[in-house]
Image 1 (spheres, rainbow, N blue to C red):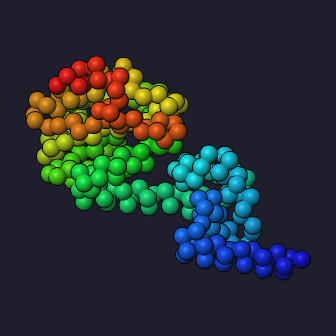
Image 2 (image 1 turned 180 degrees about the vertical axis):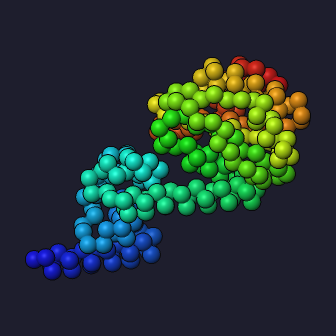
Image 3 (image 1 turned 90 degrees about the vertical axis):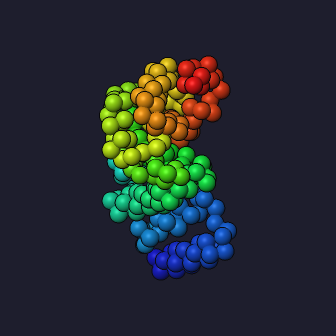
Length: 234
């Protein structure tokens, strides 16, 4: 019986590989196939289902913290590391495209890169992206890490770094770990303060993104109700 089970698993995995090459795998099956490389001698379909149910989708599986992944029954160190590696490689690929100036050609690349910086984080993290000519990324910097609902931000330090890098534009991004809410009043005031400081030296604030607990990205320049703020009156 064990041999038959082994033959079935081997045959099933080969079918998954063939479907992958034919571009016929569902999202769930792609996760299942990935798991086979970490767990070669076990049926991983139940584990794939458990991960999807726990995190709500493939995207949230590969962006989940390591500490949360290993809490799922059946996920060991190697499996969690493989899943995290996929997420990290995707982040690297977006960073390379932004560095090559793709943020100007395709703003969706920049938006997705910013999402991947902070999605799934358990506390607020505030990043600053510094750009040179043609919106080429010069540096991605973790400006500060805070609590579940607050991060201290220092406009003077952002300006200092921008001047040191000879940056022309700046992009801000932070997360809301506990909600899907857009920009708070404090977020708007802080954005205005940073833009005012940058403008003293003719450095532009390209935009500010907030990434919510469910991975929604709010763009301060595209959020209609914010247009009454001073940020849109300049």
